[in-house]
Length: 353
Image (cartoon, rainbow, N blue to C red; front, side, top):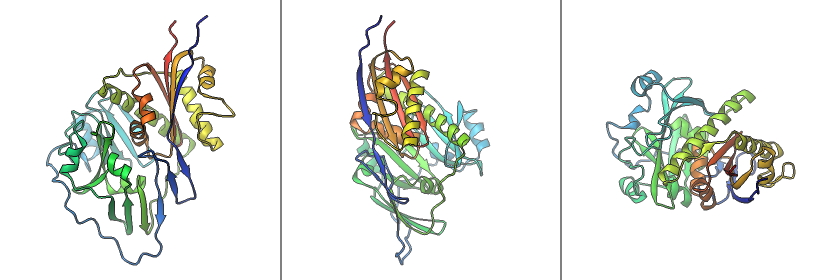
């Protein structure tokens, strides 16, 4: 008979949904979107006139707008292809290494519409992944209010102080770049390149607009299943690369912990609550025991309402309590369960046999 040590660590990223056009977040830096319709504006918004950074003629940003066949010729077959809820698929390269990147291919045009560069070895000049944040700030003009015109709609993005610290947005030639920073180490974690279409569809910041926005995606149950499974894998890959960057061992995937995590995300969505504690399925200890997990140490991160797996993982990194779980060297296994914009990570150190 093994003795079970029930030391459990919890972390929460809270988002409150209020009304059809307003989403208020807590203090988590990347956790929500606040949308307002300005029906009384009389003047159109001009695009930002400030000059952005000089765009190099080479580098990963040159893939933006390239065809799928060009990407396959240049980078080869991706390690996998992940579905999203935004009309593009992620081509995944370099998992488990500092060459990790996600290339977003639009499923209608078959061209690159977004890129997420996380690996330090990627050519992201003038931005240096792993470099100090102040270097990035010195190289580019940062604004907390950004205006753009999109297909007849005038949009204002309003970046909070937390946004400016952890994920500022800049114009980069004909595209947009979101710099994702680690506010604890004050370093650049990754670089996210987006077309205006992707930026507007995800609207990751508080915003006001005059006109119409693209309709929110309508996914079938099968579509959601594919997206959820893709986000599970991406959260797992990004989490492990971040652990390696902080000199911690990567975690092994746990099918049992995945089931516990997935069922919790599904229940939170369907029962319309947000908590580690459930009156239907109990606490983390109870949920893990249901999947026959005997553990010395266990922890859980939950979140809801983020645009995608990239945003939620970096949100956890920039929240002190979540970060403790994400980078805890005592954990050896991880299960990630996503369900329609609800996310759960269950970390485990199993009981030794």
